[in-house]
Amino acid sequence: MRFVERQVRRLRAWSLVGAIGMLAACGGATTTSTTLICSGSGGCGEQVAVLDAPTGPNTTEIVVDSGPPGAFSLGVTNVPYVTVKVCRPGSASDCVTIDHVMLDTGSIGLRVLKSRVASLGLSDVPVAADTSSATPAGRAAECYPFVLGAVWGPLATADLHIGGESATSLTFQLIDDDRATAHPAPANCQAAANGALLDSAAMLGANGILGIGMVNIDCGLTCLNNAYSGGYALYYSCPAGSPACAPAAMPAASQVRNPVSLFAVNNNGAMIAMPALPALGATVAKGRLVFGIGTQANNQIPLAATMYLVDPNPASPSYLYVATQVGSRRYPNSYVDTGSNAMFFDDVALPKACQVSAGTASGWYCPPTAWHQTATFIDALGTTGTVEFSVESADTLFSSGASAFANLGGTAGQPADTFVWGMPFFYGRKVFVSIWGQVLSPNGPWYAF
Image (cartoon, rainbow, N blue to C red):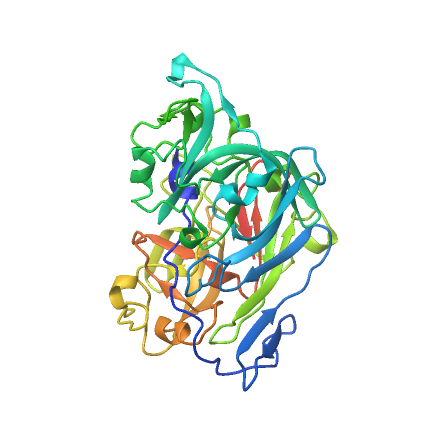
């Protein structure tokens, strides 16, 4: 199913540049909604951009910083994090709180390092034997591929709490970070990961992933029917006492769910609101994740916003994409994604002669001066709108010591027809992402900003 190929597309090339140097400016405010806080002895050692509204029980804080303890030793760049509470089903006290969970609008489902919830003793999700689909009985596991790597591990069921919202009896994935695991990742999963299994905070740059993208479940018919021929298997059954796991048919009710779709009221999408940033970025950026669209006073779409419908046709090569036009260059397969830590697109005119970021091998752009452009969004119905953006030298940005940048760009191995509007796009905006199939008008997958 094309959804697996096109909607699962996370984890771009992280920056491994540490927090060194000073920011050129501090204090003041870039917009009426952004507060810049300057701290540090002997100068502006830290600049924090804060957007602290809207508030309410359907909201929680987003933090972009250098990552969790145990992540990359030199820090991460442009990764938005939220904090979640995971509880044994039906329990109000047998819970763990997990910080630095990556917020990802381009994937589906909660996935956390298994060690972070080990104290809860969560039950496995069983897989029934099905001879018609060659599925053996066992416990359910999943191999979930991203652009640069994959996560592997068993499924479990728990109650999720975030802000004032709850998703009870949620099926989610435990990322197996046990080096002595009884069921190691199969060869097919290793191939899907290109050898890069993201099985630790150091590899993932996070303690987990909260995928709140445009659909309710993370696979669909392909996994329902064990129809993985010609592609990588997502779901597996791991029989007790055997180290080998086999590709499995997985009922829709047992597949990993979009947690937002299970919320009682605010379940049709989410809004991401982030502060605007200075030209050289901020050490920390704090914004808001607001659940629901048009369900509360704090999640109404502004009259000035434009709605962009993605292509809803699974048979289309542009399924779940919009188009981007920059000058004479058109990128028909474009998407908006908090899980990508830069704007990723192919432009041979932009130099990649970077120094601190490993030169052309890194994929980062390093123009001699800031590259300013106007892009046109074009949705599946022909609706258009313009977006101003810029790309600064990655060398300049990484040497600033900041973790959040609105003008970081690169290629990261993307196809030539793809433009990824990653985390830089979200700074200084309110961006709405709908969930297809929930109560919406119009009913379809779309962005609005």
